[in-house]
Image 1 (cartoon, rainbow, N blue to C red):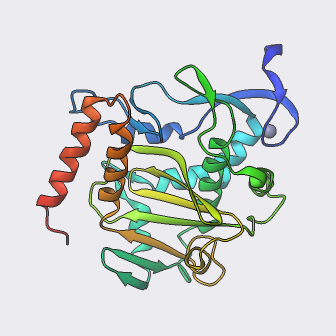
Image 2 (image 1 turned 180 degrees about the vertical axis):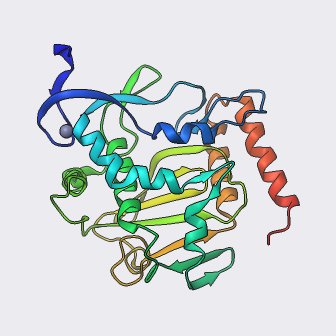
Image 3 (image 1 turned 120 degrees about the horizontal axis):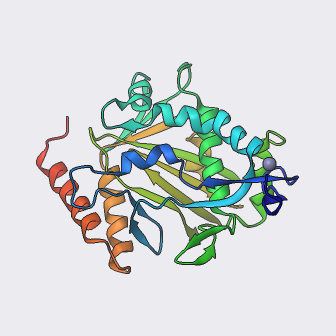
Length: 280
Ligand SMILES: [Zn+2]
């Protein structure tokens, strides 16, 4: 093995042989391709850039043991349960067998108590791993090394949680919203943040799933009392309007960037399709 790849692994902090690893797991890339489109490459959007290319976002950051830990404690399960073009959306099928808890407009919260086959700890580990890796200053975009979000002083708390050395940070709360649409918007929005009064809200989207992570001293009660990490009410939300909201947020990003025409067309077509189909 080559000498220059021995470095400190950013997860276990030990000197190891470092692997080239993905920010967005490679298994999601085929879901992001529309084979019949003019440009069949994956559609990926971040706060500043929209790109539609077959290049995958990778960095040399973790050792093989830590990669394996992220796979086995979260990623593998989420990948098996994600929305897939030919297989449907296994996670949503399982969640919608639960009793709904609250419904409000397009949004329904499903209570996970008693649902043994929805593995909340795997969902939490996967999402935390995505947010934590996005906070590392190792990703090269337009030849510049960058981080996508900053989790400030909580970075080490998340790192130790991922290793199983600490509980999920008490100053953080995680929510998951699933698309209620038969075919979700086929794009990924990489982790990005907004600053609110007393906390930061970080989010990312893969087809059919949006994860939100609130971090700070003054997280609103709604995050604490309902969500994946809530002690009171473990719920997953299903929202018929999720794709429209994601589409709107992507339009805002892409207005400010050199937008790939095919990606814009794809999002517009999806919006049209949804407004034509009655929700069932
Ligand atoms: Zn490691």
